[in-house]
Image 1 (spheres, helix red, strand yellow):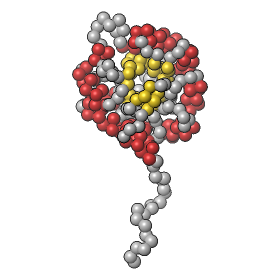
Image 2 (image 1 turned 90 degrees about the vertical axis):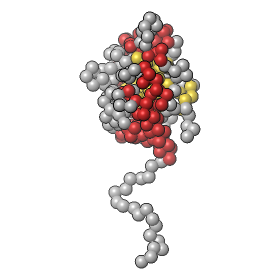
Image 3 (image 1 turned 180 degrees about the horizontal axis):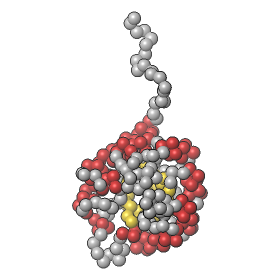
Image 4 (image 1 turned 30 degrees about the vertical axis):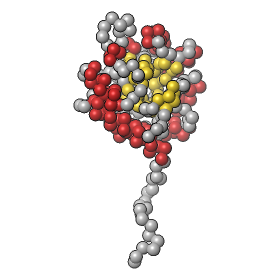
Length: 256
């Protein structure tokens, strides 16, 4: 299926974005990345030896993949802004996945700090992709601040719980028909990814669901197919839900 995905002037053939953490080896990570078909990979700036003094996963990424630095591990706007500036200097990219955590147990985002950081980074020329709770009003504020896309969570990071509030994602899709919505965090199995895409997400970012699978490359393949299936289902339009049965075959002219 040819269904390209454009973001901030860059076109992608895959709607799956993946991460680099938790893999048992670099070889496993590389195999999973290839199997996923993804063209963009996010990396935690706070985990990278940016001076290149030691080997890291950066040495094992395909040069064809676009790197999306993220500010994981930041707990306030100031830290996230400093991290973004460091990423731009070290990795030579204006793209940043903005992540400002508000609680160390749930890793839920601090939306207010995220918005504050987004406004400053956008003014500095960053392409800001903000991770936040699945809140329509915050999505509107982040888009108004100049973010080219919004990244609502499906569930807490690394939980694998799937889409916890499908109504929120559906409302966000309907109320923001022209916005790019990338579901970030919470996907555990391919059916979760398919559901998010069926609800109208433009793309999905995931890491743990693939990295912690017993067979990471196989799970990456499954996620790739699920994202494609969910997207095709969204474009096709689902049948209406009915309280009562509706015969599959017409009864007019039936033999009695």
